[in-house]
Length: 79
Image (cartoon, rainbow, N blue to C red; front, top):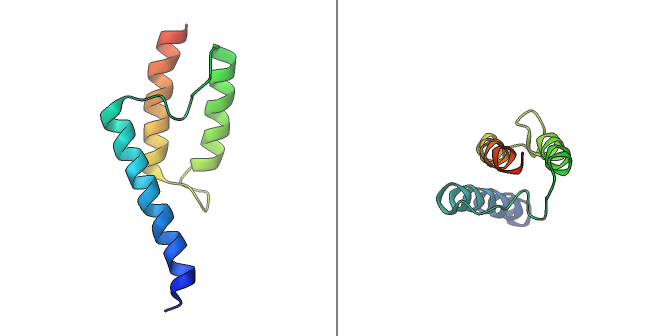
C-alpha cells in the first residue's frame, strides 16, 4: 500500500463525513453562506449540484442530501 496516496482520500472522506454530521445537527448555513437573494441561492445550488452529484468522481450522496435540505429551508425563508 502506498500510504501517501491513500491518506489524502481517507482524510477527504472523514472531512466530508464530519461536515455532513455538523450540518444535520447544527442547522448552520455552510453551503449557502453569503447568499442573500433567491437568484443567488438558485445559482449556488446548481453549482453545488454539479460538484457533489453522486455520478461525479468526487460526488457524495450524503453531502448532496444535506445541500438539498439546506436549499429547501433557505428557499422558503428567502421568498
